[in-house]
Structures are given as C-alpha cells and as structure tokens.
Image (cartoon, rainbow, N blue to C red):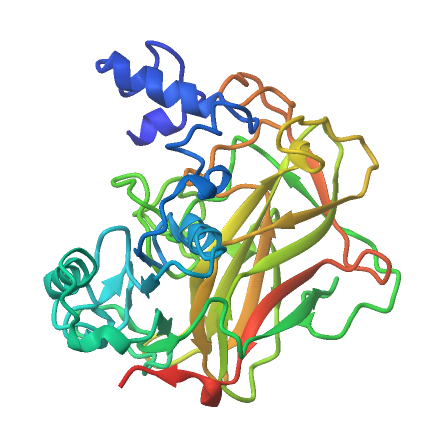
Length: 420
C-alpha cells in the first residue's frame, strides 16, 4: 500500500483496488470531480442545499474532534437550526470516527472521563434507547432537561506519559445551549516574518516568506482528523515529528518544522490557561509562480519540555487545506497568475482545547499534507489526472498591508459550564 501511494494518480486498472472494478470506478469518479458541480449537489451528498426538504423532526448529532466529519456535523447543526423549532442535540467527543467510548486518540490520552458512557450518559446504548423512547414513544426520560450541546474540552492533563506510553492530555465535558458558545470571543493572531504569532498586527514592510514546494517530497500526514487509513496513516493526536509509522519518512527524529517547506509561527508561552472552543479560520495572503498550488494550515498545542518529553510535544489539534485555483469560485476554477498576491481562507475543523499556562499556540503553514490530501502537481491539471509535476515557489506575506492571520474563538475557562 505504501508503494501505491507513491504511484499516484491512480487510473483504471492501475490502482490497489483494480480487482474490484466497481469500487475503483467509484473512487476515481469522486477523485476526478474537483469542481463543485451537479455531481456534488446530489441530495445524498449535499445536505446544505436541501435543508428545506428535511422534515421538522428531532435530530441528534454525534461526532468527535479527530473524526473527518467535524465540519459537516456543525454545518448541518447550523442548517437544521434555521427553523428554530426543531429539537437538536449535539455531542462532540475527543476520539476518532465511530469510537464513542475510547479514552485516547493516537498517542494522546484524554482520561477515563472522555468516554460518553459513564460520563454524560450511563452508556452509549442508554443514550440511544432514551432518545428513541422520548421521540418515538413519547416516554419522557429524566434527562429531558439536559443541555442541547455537550462538548469534550481537550487538555488540562498532567502532560506526563501514562502507563500505555501516551501523553496525558486530559480533558473534561462542557455544556452549552448553542454552538458556537455564546460566551466565546474571536481573537485574531497575526503571523510575523520572524516566526511570532501574536495579537499585534505587523507594522513593517517585511519581505514575504518564500519556500519551494516539491510534489515529489510532500509533508507527511502525522495524525489529525481522519476516518481510516492504516497502515499508511492514522488519525488522532500525534507529536508533529516524522516517525517510522508514517508515510514519507526521510528525516527521522526531526520535527516537521525543520523542513524548509514548513513555516511555523508560535505565540509566547501563555501566562494563563486559555480555552479555544469554536471554528478556526486562517486568512492567508500568498502567491505562487505556477498555475496552481495548495496551502495548508495546522493548529498545534506546543507543550514545554518535561521529564517525559525532553523536547516537548507538538500536539496536532486540527488542520485544513485550500487549492488556489478555487480562490474565486469552487464552480469555476481559474489558474493562478505569477506575481498575483491571493487572499485565501483556509478553514481547519473546529476544535475545543484548553491550552495550559506555559504552553504555546502554534500554526504551521505549508503546501501539502499527504496522504490525507492528494498532492497538487502544481501544473493546473484536473484532480486525479496530472501525471507530470513541477516544483512551485510559494510565498506567504506577513507585512502591514498583507497581514496573514489566524482567528480563534476564545473562552475564559471560568466562563465555561462543566458537566457535573
């Protein structure tokens, strides 16, 4: 499988699933539909275009911060809230896709309090049984006044290595009447050319940060929000350094930030605990010398050095990507123009994490995260069809007139309502 991931793009009869031609055709069909057209507007794929067709019935949303369905969970929650009459429940755990009762994701442990069962409901089965009893049989359970939004706030643990060798990141369940949390505030953090991430806007005419993005040497995926991918990649919380378990190992032992094609920006060590709960938005001023390229953004909780982690721990929380040919429209892509400074928006998945005092908030900017996302060949070729590649010279601007920035939703920890 690892060898096949180095032989992309796949084509008919030239893929690891060629022995199942119906599935291969399905895979290639989706891969090659890059533009947002009628293919993606189907009722079964595009709920956002058909909210008015949903009956006015109660709906329960359940997902996890390291699941690949975080975005559509919140989009659908917001879309189905428009009527104002539909009963909606939202539960977001800390784990992976479908894992409602595990206490860890990747190399990170959230503690026994992370499971849904035994913490916010007696068990996962009880939650479903009570739900259907209430809405199908009219049986009012004792929990009928429970909050509509319950989220697992990651973070707050000891930071030590637990008995299973995982980082004790910890966490706790919080509750609210709505999403995003009404008490949250938008804070904007600006990228500075010297690697700082701060709330102060750049005031100088700093030169852009330039790097070469080589599609033949992509930044490897190390955890994050994924559905599946073993043995090539794995979702969850992982330290952002290359590891023999992951694709593309070429610099074992070095953090990803040591790569020339990764730009890292960090805050100073936080003086007090800070809870980030809500959407994450990266506004980037960037350019490329070719007809197309990608830009990625990754939000990271940086632990200080400790006895168990002498070089610290850079925990991935969420990440996103943007393909620049779609900077004006997802329906009608346009090639990039050399010298054009593009203003693009990358939307990593929402998250909920308590950054403890002494930690740092970090954002990594690059142009690939493979194999979670397919690698842009930088030629402008349609998705899934580009057999040639070129190195792209990309630039990120961090000056007073083109201030790239990260927007987070901040909630003072004392203003959160914890599930008792």
